[in-house]
Image (cartoon, rainbow, N blue to C red; front, side, top):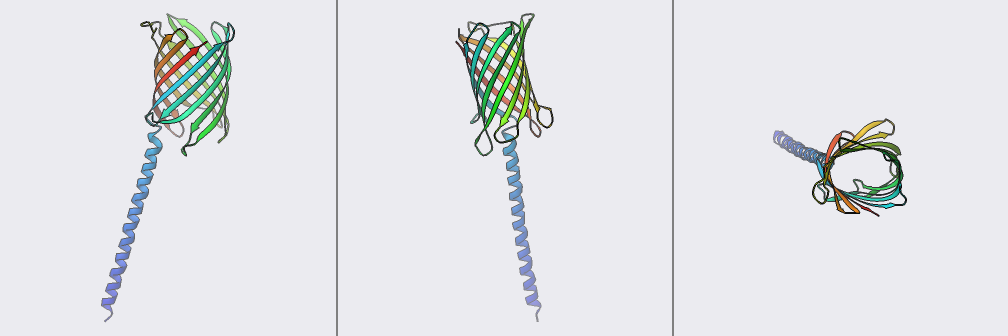
Length: 241
């Protein structure tokens, strides 16, 4: 006489378990979807992203062999829609010989984090650049040693080396001149490591006597936990006094 109640109770229990299973499946699907969304958002900005960089330089010659340079740079990422980086740079450069230029400077950097807040880096540096010419091609090899002081993580040092090759040809009244460059970055922290490379192909031109410009494409390969690439369209304007 108790079997109907027993069957009814078992049926209700199965329905509850089934309902919990469905809820668990929905929760699991939601978690998986959120994880995938986070992964996509984490890597879409870094790997294969298109960016636009603009640099403006003002140079003031203070003697025959020395000058002061003020530089500002702005970078837009996430398909060139979001300003995420800016720096302000003041440097002093001296020509020791026709083949050697040395300099010291300070760069103030603001870079945006995931919370949409700009973080500060203070970067004093020293540079040495060698110049030479071969078969009409002009070469310059710049070594740069930086001290990277952060407000939000431990300090470190960086060594950068940039080799630039300028073609011997100039076209039109703007003196359009093709060039190639490659820059490598070595970070000195707990472990010395190679973590960034920038390959560029561009055109230099003279707009006016004291105003020059560059337009270039850069492929930047950088490593945090893994290597990723960034495609960059850049412009640079230099005004000399």
